[in-house]
Amino acid sequence: MVIDDAMKKIEDLVSFFKTYRETGFSKALESAKEIAIEMNIDPVFVRKREIIRKRYFDENKNDVSSSVPQSLEESFKTNYFLAVVDQAIVSLNSRFEQYQEYEKTFGFLFTSDKLRSLEDNDLKSCCLRLEAALKHDEVYDIMEPTYMWS
Image (tube, rainbow, N blue to C red; front, side, top):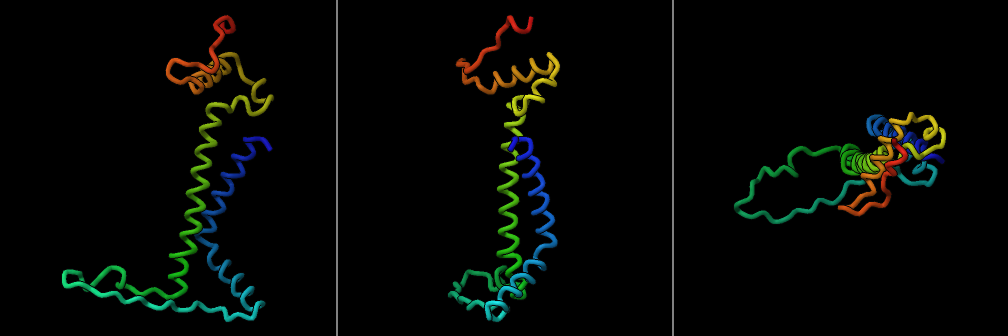
């Protein structure tokens, strides 16, 4: 697979997850209920046991954590479903940004067609970007051959 194709696939996957975040919970819930019924499990959310901790005299009685109780389904959606989907989106975006950085530096080398289609000035600027990317302090991995651009 060519890196260009991989970048496009990741971009499409991020788009899918963003759409899935908005519309996917109801579909996932229906699928989960069907699977639970097939396995002879009651498809309901079980209420977790509430942990009551001792409050100290200087604590606010109207604590944020006990303000508005959510339904079990809403609680699952916010605490698990959205958290997992958001984490997937963040992870994919991070990888996509890394691929974009690679593409800026090495993109002209991804395919021979892309390399052949570049004009001399564009090729020179790509080579200079590559040289700059592979330079550390005054140590060069590659150096521009000055005779090439005369």
